[in-house]
Amino acid sequence: MTTTTDDLPLAADFPPATYDDWRKLVDGVLKGAPFEKLVGKTYDGVRIDPIYRRATNTGPIAGRAAAAPWQILQRVDHPDAAAANAQALHDLENGATGLEFEFAGGPGTRGFGLADASQATLAKVCDGIHLDAGIMIALNPVLGRENAGETFANLVEARKIDPAKLDLHFNYQALSTVAVRGAAAAAWAEYQKPFGQVVSGLIKRGFKGPFALADGRPVHDAGGSEVQELAFTLAVALAYLRMLEAGGIDLDAARAAISFRLSADADQFLTMAKFRALRRLWARVEQACGLAPKPIFVNAQTAWRMLTQRDANVNLLRATMATFAAGLGGANAITVLPHTLALGLPDDFARRVARNTQLVLLEESNLAKVSDPAAGSGGIETLTSQLSEAAWPLFQEIEKAGGIFAALEQGLLQSKVCAMRALRETNVAKRRDVLTGASEFPNLHEAEIAVLDVKPVALSPLPEPKIKFDALAPMRLAEPFEVLRDRSDAALKAHGARPRIFMANLGTPADFTARATFAKSFFETGGIEAIDSEGFADPAALASAFKASGAAVACVCSSDKVYAGSAAEAAKALQAAGARHIYLAGRPGDQEAALRAAGIGEFVFAGGDALATLRDAYRRMERA
Image 1 (tube, rainbow, N blue to C red):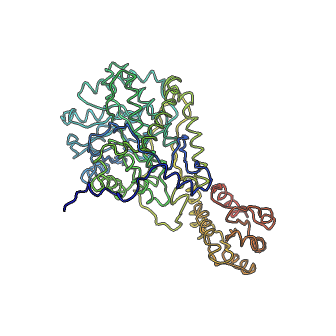
Image 2: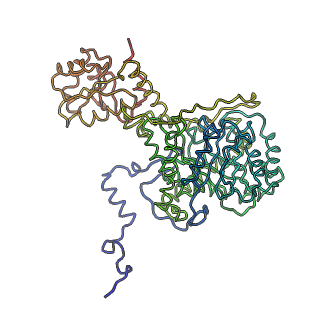
Image 3: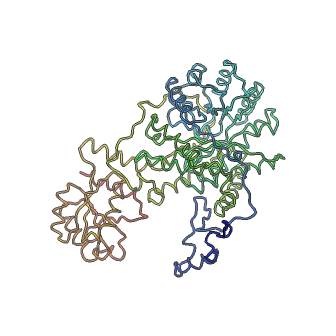
């Protein structure tokens, strides 16, 4: 007798599982606690449920062509043209399918980039590169500097290459640039005619574009939310669309002249939903313009703000998650920021890993084989709709203000991003938002990571701008903790030892291990080395061990039960032994008054302001 797989459906011997069955089991575990305890919220207030039903009446969102891989872009940002050329050739020979040219002074260069955009420099950088061999070239011209787009077009013509055969993205991004600078050389109306002429001229010369880049990175880099990034990107794209049409370019050709870029971070589901939402939102703009929607080209770049200088190898994991999410979210091209970029100009190894992150996901995990794999997923479809519905009113608010340039002049968007940034900084300080290697699980003995010995590019200042407003200044979330780690390194270099805190463990390992482990991580995130100890029952022995440690401060660690019987005596002994300040790991509860009276100065626990505590600890340890 033969059987088919249809005769043996998966889990056929089990009853079907329903949402209601799951809720009954969850309610039993909650034991009367509200179900809302399991519901999360994004920074935009978007609700995230613990489970979703399958989405119905949905289909794939038009993005990349079916089963087509995304373009693997590699940054060309070495200030020296010859070195940049060597890197670019190596990248293309080892898996990159495109190059992204960064020029010094641009909004995303992070201090580096090609020193100038002269034809001699570009010719040297492109020496030996077959521009018409199917590779993608993305330029990022810098507003107010040499016109890299025009210069590159001249180079193409000098090489007698047919412009129509190039996959060349000019990426003019004036609005994103002025948003990061907080300044503009002129009113927006004065930009429109010259830009329209530039694009019209390039089109007449046979270049296909796209020419303008609606870049959402400034909002993300500045600490903004997904909704704010989407609304900004949409408003920028619409401003470019109007500008191109005003320059005499047909509306259908004008929209084809625009591409998009979003940041991708390690929040997998939100990143996927954000990229999908952008396509839906722009389709709505196209419909409002009387156009039938067409797929747009969406670039992704892994997020700057999530990079850490400390334990930088963890950035590899963050970049992998971001790339995974952007790829499944339909990105047409992805640039992975090398994991060492926050430390300096990345070396060949870091560039190789940035390429291979994408190659492994494409060639081994086959992520591009399914078009819009999130289609029909209850969670992702819901998040996509929620982000779209929340971004549209903000986009309309920007439009009512007169468009994105006017909104920037009025500070409308900056005030919202600033509030979101402050909330992120608070959550990082309280370690609610975890940055592995920086705010959690620090390694004070990590090996130094190599970067190239290249100094950031120094440029001549631009003319005094006519218009100034608050800038969308980029930030990295880990910086406040890194400042403290730098302070620790300086002390080690100057005195041969880091600032120290003595772990005053009480009782048996079963009593103190959990809180001592927490306290060690807590203080070492700020570079304060934790001196461990065995459990003590005798206050005199505890005082002696503290004196021998050479630490200036101490942290009492044990269970609530032990605290009730021993913490006060331990604190008095530590104080008598010269401890400048005494911490206790855990919430004090109803013992707080007695513990403070015994000499406990502060309590460290999950959810407390770690940064404030660590800064205060330095102040106390450095006190004469």
